[in-house]
Length: 75
Image 1 (cartoon, helix red, strand yellow):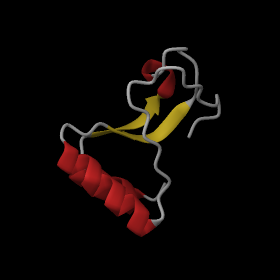
Image 2 (tube, helix red, strand yellow):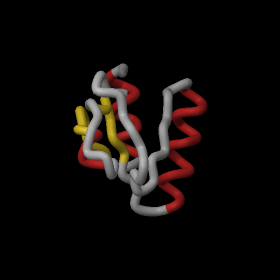
Image 3 (cartoon, helix red, strand yellow):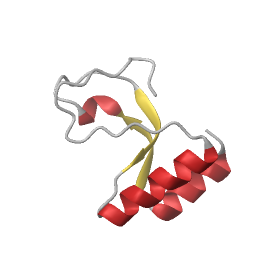
Image 4 (cartoon, helix red, strand yellow):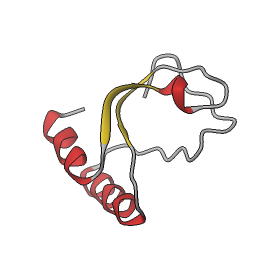
């Protein structure tokens, strides 16, 4: 992911780079995410979604991570 895009998302919402996705699903498997955003309020969810849609950045909303399987190669 482009560094400028990452910095802009980090400005919008608290985020973690190179996050281990196995920590966020009930099966405890999966690779890493380039950037893992953790919104604390609805406005942050909307802002990061709007930014990603506008910039063509892939976005996956995972909720509580129940019954999700992430690829070992990451996202």
